[in-house]
Every structure is written in structure tokens, then in C-alpha cells.
Amino acid sequence: MTEPTYRTPEALELPFDQYQRYATAARAVEGLGGWSGRRVLDVGGAPGFLELFFDDAQVAVIDRFGTHGGNFVVADGAHLPFADDAFDIVISLDTLEHIPAQFRAAFLSECRRVAQDFVVLSAPHDTEGVALAEDALQAFVTARFGEVFGTLQEHIDNGLPKIDDTLAAFSGDGWNSVRLPSGYLPRWLLGMVFHHELLASGLPALPELHRFYNERQSLNDNADPSYRQVVVASGRRSLDELEALIDSLRSPATSPDSGATLAAIGGAVLSARLSGAGQIADLHNKVSGLEAELAGARSETHNRDVELAQLRAQLMVAQRKAEASRYSLERVANAAARRLRKPDGGQQ
Image (cartoon, rainbow, N blue to C red; front, side, top):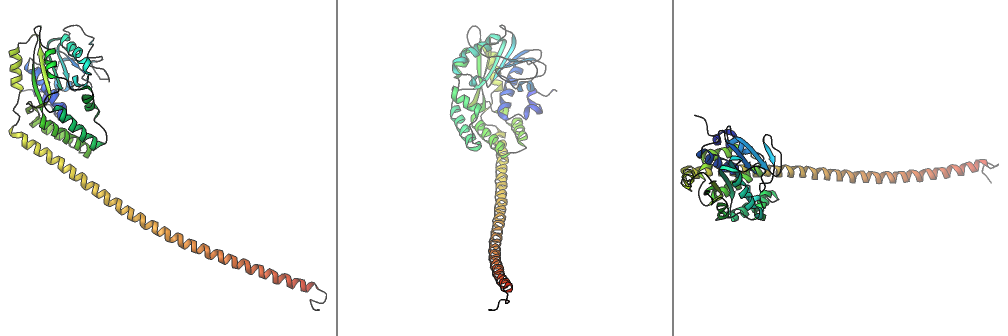
């Protein structure tokens, strides 16, 4: 049996927050017929992680910035350069919150316009606890790294979208829309703190820890309250079909593995933190030893400087004495020479 696209090693080693958004979208697509032979547009998808989650779809990626190998187009999501119904599936993952509020309606309208079958859109929305969780994470990152989390700051500056507005944009005129919670908020915040702490600690095994969480827990995080909302909308699928899909993807807030998984990762974080603290203590000891050696060298240098100064003073005294003796000898010699030059040999 072929391994699902969201279970491949390359996909599983993505940071859990990225993995959740792509894997949940992939599962939604597979639940509505799969990728094979479909024309897919990934709106705001640079650098192209979606490619890890499909087999043989024809995927185009658009974004306002960046370069990307393959079928990449630089374009504005609020003005898509494609005809109506140009794609079977339109995907947009964690892009809506980065769009200023006044352009969001146009962005959603364009996603709907070019989608022939259905749209899968995910983004953090202004739902219970999300803004508070983002503020907490921003405070942690700023304290730990000394600078703000730029992409998170865009959420704060733009204001989070409203889920009712997003659902309404994909409703009416034969369209139906449903929502799926993704990223159970208490675990999301803890996981993001763990992730950034391990980044700061420089833990080489971070991808393996993400894989551990993604294999055991990540797909069980589709429960309220959630960090992001996944909206699945279609002008061809019935509301009953979409709701059945959501019911198949929804998960309980707790699972048998969730506590053990977080405990294991928390242990790794604590170990890395203590190891880092031990390394810092070792560095402090080494620095203290070097400072002691430097102080000793400075003391020795000072003593030598004092000794050298004393020798220089003694030399100066000796030179002055020698100069005085030379001067006295010259006087005696001159006086003797004068006496010898007198006719009587210097006698009166």
C-alpha cells in the first residue's frame, strides 16, 4: 500500500506548525477525491512545501515575492492572473492573516473565482485565545532572541481575520463552506515555545523531535480551541459531503498519546536547556580561569615593570656617578697638564 503523502519522511520532518497546515489540507484533498491529475493553485505558497504532499497533480504556486523552481508565478492574490474556473483545486495556507484587512475580501473572492471544484484555506482567525497565545509567543521569542518574530508581528499589525467573514465569502450562489479546527491551541502554544527554545539551544535533533510529534500527535490536533481554522468550500459539493469530510478529520482534544508525547518532548527540551546551562557554566569556569591567568600575567608584568624601573633608576645613578667621576678626573688631568707646562715645572 502506498504511503500517504503526509506520512513521507520529508514531510514529517517539517516543523510541526508547518506540517499541520499542509497535512490537514492534504487529508482534505484526499477526502474529496485526491490530487491525481488535478489542476492545483497554491496561493501564497512560496517556498513550495505543498509539493511534499502530492503525487502527480499539476501545481502552480503564486506569491508576491520570492523565486521558486517549477511553475511559480509572481502575482497578487487579490488580482489573480487566471481565468474563471482555471483550477480544480485552490489551496491557500496561512496567507490570509498576512494580507491587510482591506484586501482580504478581494483575496477570498479571487480564490473562489478561479476554483472549479473546491477551495481549502487555512489561517489563524480571531477565535478564542488565539490573539492571547500569539502575544505570549511574541513575548517569549523577543525575550529569548532579543528581537520580535517578524511574521507573527504581521498578524498583530494586520489584525486577525474573522471566521464568519471567511465562511461568508465562500457561501451563496451554490457555494457551501465548512470549518475545521486545526492546531489544538494549548498544545500549539507549548509546541511553539518548545520549538523556539530548542532553536535557541542549538539542538541538532530538532527535526527528529518534530517528526516524533508529527507521527504521534499532530493529526490529532484538530480540536477546539484551535490556533488556525481550515475552511473547505465548494460550488459543486453538497453541504452534507463537506460536513462528512470535516467529521472524519475532527479529533478529540485529548488522546492517549498526547500527554506522553508532550512529556517526552518536554524532557528533551529540559535536557537541552540544562545541557546548555552546563555548557554556559563550563564557559564561565574557563573564562574565570583565563581571567585568573591574565591577572597573574598582569601582576608578573607589573612586578617586572617595577624591577625594570628600579634597574633603570640604578643605571641612571651609576651613569651620573660615572659622569661625575669622569668630570673630576678631567679636572685633575687638566690641572696637572697646566702645571707641567710652567717653566719651573709648576714650582714657584
